[in-house]
Image 1 (cartoon, rainbow, N blue to C red):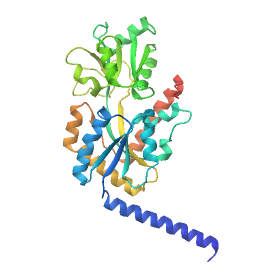
Image 2: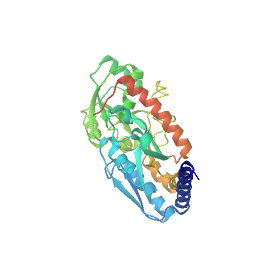
Image 3: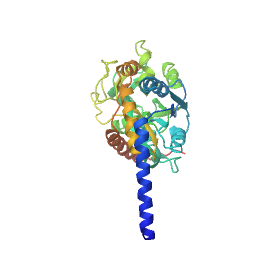
Length: 326
C-alpha cells in the first residue's frame, strides 16, 4: 500500500472511531453530573429559569445539573469557558440570545466567535419585553410616548439595561421606528432601573416582563405595550407593539443552550432531547409561565434557522446605528 493509501486509511479509521465513540456517548448520555454555565449572577432571571429547567432535567436523567454563574463581558466569559471545555456534553452553556447571535458584531475583538466555537442545542425559552412609564408621565400608550418624545427631543430619560443586549437594541429599534430621540440612561441590571423608575428619576423604560410584572398591579409603573406577536396571558389588557402602530418593533428576549463546537452531532441530538423534554414538561411550563416566561424547547434544526434570522435582523440594526462596544 502506498504512503498516500496508508494515510487515507488512517484518516478514515480515525473518523470511524470518532463516530463510534460519539454514538456510544449519545446512547449512554448522561452518566455523570452536567455543568451548565450561565453568564448572569445567581438569583437573576436567567439563573432562575435555568434552575427551574435543571431540576426537571435531574428528575428525567437521574444526574445532577450543576449551575455555574460566570457573569461578565456580556456573556462572553461564560461562553469562552464552555467553548474551551471538553466536547463530551457535560459542560454546557445557558446563554442570552444576544450573546449567541449578534453581540460579537459590536466588538472589534470578541472573546470568542459563537458561530465557530459553539454548537447549538436548543432555544429553551422566550421572554416578552414590555414598554413602561412612570405614572406621572402624561402618556397611556406607546404612541403617546413617541409623540411626547417628539415634542421633547433628547429630554425624556429612558433606561437602558445591559449595553448591547436585546433590551438596548429593542429601545433603539423603537426610537428608529418612531423617528425620535431620548436620553439613554445606562444600568447594569433591572433592579436599580426599576428603583429609579418608581422614584421618578427615569421616565420610561423597556424591561423583560418578569422583571416588572409584580409592580404593575400597584400602579407604581404604567404598562404601555408588550413586544411579543400576541398579547400575553398575564397582561391581557396590554396591547402589543404592533397593535400600537409599530409593526417592526419586536424584541423579545430569549435564552438558549449551546455546547463546545466539537461535540459530536449524535450527542448534540441526545442533549437536545433531554433539554426539550425538561423544558416542555408541564411542571416546567407552569413554573416558567408564573414568572412571565414562555417555554420553547426547539429542535436543533429549528433553532439554527431562528438564530440565523435573529443575527441578520439585529446585526443590520447594529450597523445602522454604528453601535460599538469595548
